[in-house]
Image 1: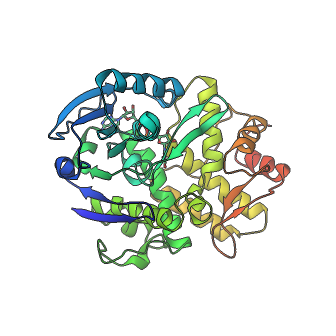
Image 2: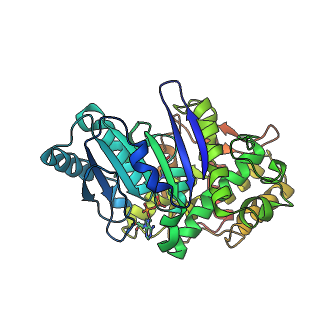
Length: 369
Ligand SMILES: NC(=O)c1ccc[n+]([C@@H]2O[C@H](COP(=O)([O-])OP(=O)(O)OC[C@H]3O[C@@H](n4cnc5c(N)ncnc54)[C@H](O)[C@@H]3O)[C@@H](O)[C@H]2O)c1
């Protein structure tokens, strides 16, 4: 079992990664918990035993479950069941479940404690870590939410045994992002609590496979991503600075997801969108003269090593106009188009990117105007 401590100004907790770690739930439940509200989805057959009275609350599948109406339904169901302020919500599921359950925990009775038991690769490496919770509204993804830290996160690799291949691929999209950030930001070089292997191999163009996807055990790879996120969250809990860099590839990714949601298809997976967003961010950075062809090729190489087809093409179904509109609404945008981009000084937040350059880059990737 690998333990990654999260030490924040306001609280401290552990992220445990490994086979069977969900069995530690009863030890890690916040003191005073008499009831546990388990928020989950149909089809997630991962049993947990909190050692106290529990009740299952099911949210519908898909991104559309991240809605204010789900929050209302859950909070009303918690109230009918008598969930008290000293009790605990436990999210058992992917990022949709951890986001919506975490937000309910943040607002129900003005805040109850919660524990994340993420059951997708994407949620284990990213969504369940860091205390960002929230839901979507029609105007965009994650526009309503709260920073609310869990009391513990249990990344049990046994939970992944039933995960469909497409969800594995989605998790690998976020892992690819971590591969960049580990190298480009020099964040969270493995520390003594979990380090194994040579940290310098992380994200380097020669050893992407061995350092990030091919070599280490699954547990170590997950822990490596968790440590990167924890390092960013610890230094910047409310996303004023370095934490924003975790959104590498996400400005376009969120726009693609919003367009997908609006079209009613809801088929695009988050990590798939992130892989496209990273390829786009590299090309936009090149167009703005921040990086050269070699660096773009390095981005493609990393994305490919995580199992994605390159060159990445945008689906012709969405217009660049619609995507730009969603991107301008992204909550990281401060009144103009803002992206996290690679450059001579490494990855940084770049504001005021001209719309023409964005549209030209989208069309370079096959997106009609
Ligand atoms: N809060 C954050 O910091 C953060 C970070 C990244 C992503 N997110 C959010 O996470 C969400 C995506 O999460 P996701 O990719 O986990 O998708 P998801 O939660 O929709 O899960 C994908 C599908 O897999 C199913 N599933 C989950 N665990 C399973 C298992 N063990 N076996 C079989 N099926 C299983 C789910 O029921 C669902 O149908 C997005 O809404 C995204 O915005 C949040």
